[in-house]
Length: 107
Image (cartoon, rainbow, N blue to C red):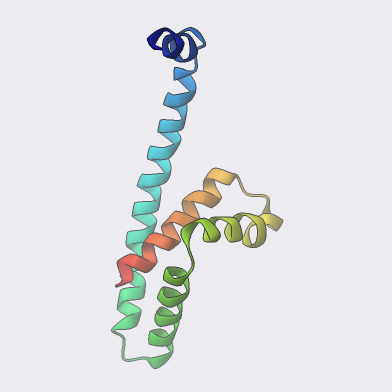
């Protein structure tokens, strides 16, 4: 069994693909956390605002984004919202994760 793992990962140079995927994952996570924190702070300020329009916007944002599963949001953002723009899939995933994170940071 160890020989099979060695042949697949080491001899086949697939470990380079795993490292590349790890780099993309770390990039998405860091940027999404930053974006989510910024969005969360802005919409949290909207929620405590005296302006009822801003409070309603923040409430709709948190209710809708938190109510839709993340996998569904990823598909909606990639195939519907950003499809006409032709954005890179990593950028769309980063934005989707950031927007989702922002909704949870708002609370």
